[in-house]
Amino acid sequence: MQINLNLMTETVIRQSYSSGIPNLEPPMLTLMIYPSAFGLFSASPFCVKAAYMLEHAGQRWQRSDMLDPRKMPHQKLPVLRTPERLVPDSDLIRDWLEAQGANFDAGLSDIQKAQARTLIRMAEEHIYFQVVQDRWTNDEVWPILRKTFFSVIPALIRTPVSNSIRRKVVQGLVFQGVGRFSPTERQDRLERDLEAISAYLWQSPYLLGDRPTSADMSVGPMLAAMRATPVETPLTQRIKQDRLLNDYVDRMEQAIPLP
Image (cartoon, rainbow, N blue to C red; front, side, top):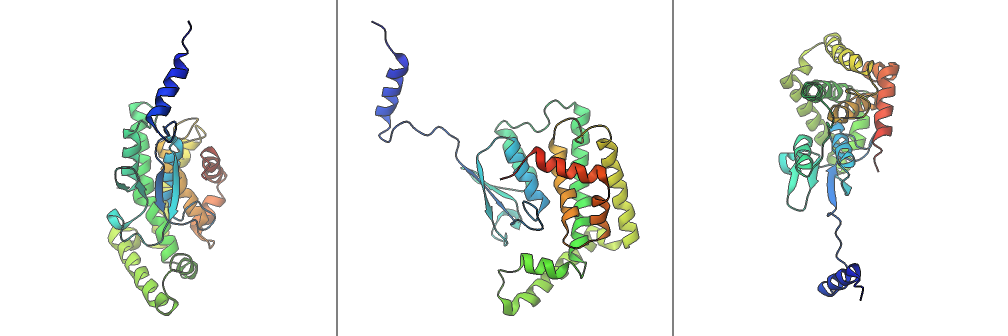
């Protein structure tokens, strides 16, 4: 007599779970981020970076928008809610994903991985603050930022509260260093970074080859944020008028489509 093992196995499982076959899919992750703004998936390039990594890793996830991260670990976004804990910071989110088996730099040599790390640090520790300077210290941009990011504050106190936060951001830029330079000096420092990025992109569609790696998931969103500032500035024009960089930003958004 022929025995159908598959049928027997399914019968045992169904008997073990009164609700039927158990759901073997991994639990849904939740990425807590700043809302969409200026035509971008999120106003924060770090939130976009985290979303790129989740998509690249093939994770099941959903977004949860918030404007006030003060109750979050590190009091900033993104934060990833996993079944075990909250994971703050895009770098720590990367570490968590890699612990689950993700590999953002597959096929890269040790030297290329080192280059990726350097590009990420350049983007996140220098280019990012150029973008913040371009947005928060520009009196033409500020009214748009206030309307976008501070709408949850009651109208009666919105202006004094938002102005106080703006002053703290500007003071932070001086403490960090970018705010100490003249516009010409800042532009010169930024130009050298953009030239370095362009040198890679002359060689391949993405920074380190024919497909996106960890470096692209950081640099791409940073350049996209620079381009998306809602008022024309020297920084927005620098990206828009550079075909190599402008096409790269578009290519990244197409390579890893976000929901």
